[in-house]
Image 1 (cartoon, rainbow, N blue to C red):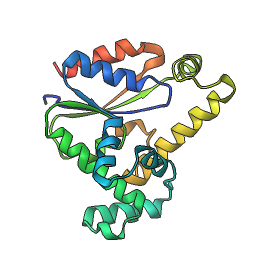
Image 2 (image 1 turned 30 degrees about the vertical axis):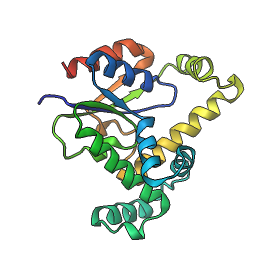
Image 3 (image 1 turned 60 degrees about the horizontal axis):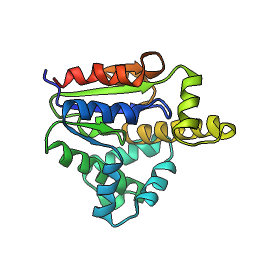
Image 4 (image 1 turned 45 degrees about the vertical axis):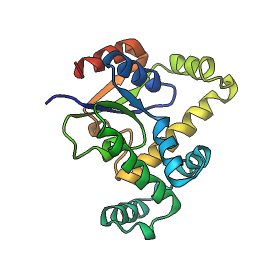
Length: 200
């Protein structure tokens, strides 16, 4: 199978965004992360910041997840919550962007949007070295050391909830992915180099 798309889910502070951008740069292809939200913002005339708040408030209830999926699959968008409309639009944007050619997709349940596409590799980036993760969060993201741990937990929980409510799968269940890399042990550059080989 020739790889055309790489989807990346990642722990906060793992360097997943840097890795995604490096892969795209090395392979000469597009990388979409926040750009997905910007497209949804244009389509729905909703500020990106408001969309991000919707993503933060999703529930991880199993029954709600089943309901959301059933409405989205049936095409009954009128019965969806505002969060549900945002998710459906994000999925549509991802598929439209994928139609433009090979790309790297960062977050936003891109693995779900592209599950019927050929040549998709789903990746999870983690960082088991807590000191390195903390240094990235404080040094690169500018989060005060006193708040870093709480911020990491908050964003990981947000990503886990968003993934679960829209896929009914656990975000940190590594069996959901084709490849799991530890950026703490390998380094962002090495992770990017290895994944770039898939697109060669």
